[in-house]
Length: 65
Length: 388
Image 1 (cartoon, each protein chain N blue to C red):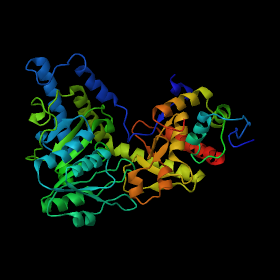
Image 2 (cartoon, chains in turn blue, green):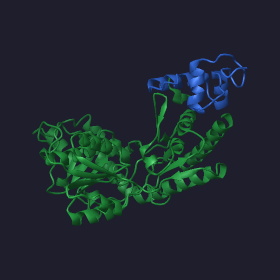
Image 3 (cartoon, helix red, strand yellow):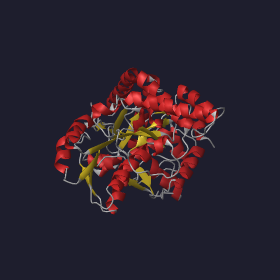
Image 4 (cartoon, chains in turn cyan, red):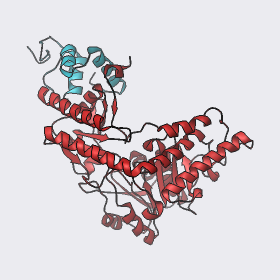
């Protein structure tokens, strides 16, 4: 597993939004990342909800995404 | 997609940002949006009824802050009122290098107005605050120069809720003959405000901070003090502020203030207990949590908490997903955290400032909601800590 894989399920090569969302929601200094499914499960929300939040953060000008 | 549907409920604990309009204020404003939509400047009955409603609201405001009706001018909100005072004083002394004193923790409507005035050559001193966020009279005295024409110190800080010693400063400035403005946006409707006890010459307030409607506020100007107009047009507001009056908003402002003042003591007691329960509840689970600002001398419903090692931005974002609305003292701009100027002024490090959240309860919050807020904050904090 490399550092761009999901810390929980091992999904490989996480995309910019998955890495950005881990940083945005957990820590900007995060060195391990979550895929959408694992992050949603961890935070007890739906994946769709996370995707809506990403669009919201983008609209705010956040360059993590 | 309405993602609020994803949460079982929404708990609004950000009343320092804005408040829900009260039922009474809402009911009272409605006729002026429908049946009685007349322009308050019109001569016929529809207009004169609107005018009467505006004057009734002016009387309500004047009564509650200890002013004369002629000293109240309705504005679009606190920012307009603040800007008007600062620009107005500057315009009064056109072509003269005057000096203005303010604090480093003012709202941006004051700070940015001061920065704009500095670009025009006006001198501005930004006073420091102590660890509790309080301005000292000693610092005010030290900062005064022969050309000091205005001091502007907020009554209650919007981020940490600290109440400033405005009456003490006002008493001194009155004797010195220096004009004194207070941004009372976070105070009016929440703590007793009397312009004579505070000895202020100007006072700004905003309706949506005390369960009125957005888009309405007022500026108190002591009798005899006139500021050059900032908006040009008709002779509304005794000729000092042009533009058709927001009659419905002004009516709502008057009734919201009347209601807030009537309930003030009971509401303050409830809100203080809510904040105490919140702090104690969180401290049980997270002993390292700290209060930013003054632990005692602050607005009853507002508290700013620091969770070292966890970003306030992360906390508020995940709390939002859980249906809890609180705010962070830092804003995320372009992926970079912009930390609060207020928290820096308290002497906090950048990391500490970034780890803060503000909880501000209002009169519609319940103790059951407070329990949920505490539980959600502790849960989210632990999730973040476990993951990083």
